[in-house]
Image: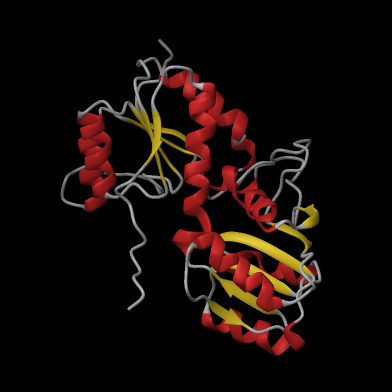
Length: 267
């Protein structure tokens, strides 16, 4: 039977940990690498609902995009939501792995998947991985930028994103004259990559969420912004990851969480 370590090696091949940002917490975060791998659950965020689901399903590994723990842990008690989740998982023998920003930046990672789903051409990372932090990984790097082929119009891009995310409405900053030929992408919270996007001469910046003042700045510059919401900008890639793992872990059941949902509900 494969082990947790076997799953970790596969995950590192998909999303090399050298691509992760310095501030991130990635890799195997909880668990015994030598333990048998019976079932795998992938999720965007390790919420109490997902913990319930993982334990009930008999999962031996949860692959969560957002790391838990994220920052240094001084105590591990049930007095906090995160502490209670980690305590319950450890007590049930469930390991936790997070690829996070390594998966965002990987050659086939979250941002590249967005570019592929939209049909962008001439795609490249907004910035390649630094030589000291994952250099030599072909086609990997932070964010993505490419050309939008659909008549160069922002309304066509918005319609495509609505369809891909199954949403009736999106928050949008209109670009100058509705132009959309060069699109920059940053999944999740993209404000930290705004300078790179602007430096890539994009007409439109597609991201999950961004601050009010960054949106105002883009409007002043005539650069469009499409905000999908953080959940919608990354959740699909959790499902992709489950399929990739299932294809390589012969005989080990792998599924994306059905318990987690977007905490924000349009009313």
